[in-house]
Image (cartoon, rainbow, N blue to C red; front, side, top):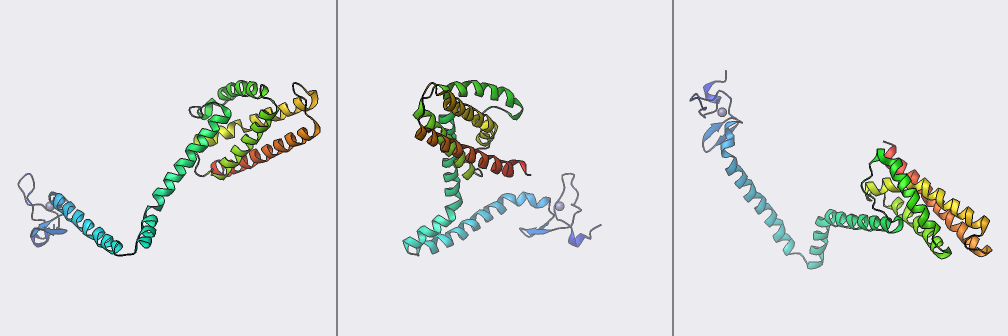
Length: 226
Ligand SMILES: [Zn+2]
């Protein structure tokens, strides 16, 4: 039993004196941690006023500085905001590029749906690369190589769904491109490649294989190591 001297001075709902020891003195009344809550609006008002006063003190200080230093300070305060905005921008650009190159939306295929998605992708994608002409095919290889490079570089900030899609289709894309290359190279149909063009094509495919390999190893480090 807490002695009367140290007890909360509030009266409970049943009309008895509160039995808890007091922790605060508000308005000359001793209050325990429960009964002090009736002062909460006053406490919040005081805190709000104090925070305002505290901020204004620094704003006044800032206003007295030369404007170039002011700008630096403001940039420093907002830096994380700017970074978020920039990261969102990069993410949107990468997603858009993914859709432009592969021609399908990246969202909405859960991990366990992988095989359905892959077979749908296989049909569409293969028919799209088989109808390309030489220049388009070359460009396409370079574009994918570049896309994988970008996703490797921005893996930490890019969209997780995009990363996963790219990872899932990587072996397929590589295989399709390699098969196309083999087909063009050996049959010469439907477009004949001369030696110089073949060298360029092979270099591009090598570039693609390299960037896919890099992406996959980075992806494994980022998502599968933990
Ligand atoms: Zn009390």
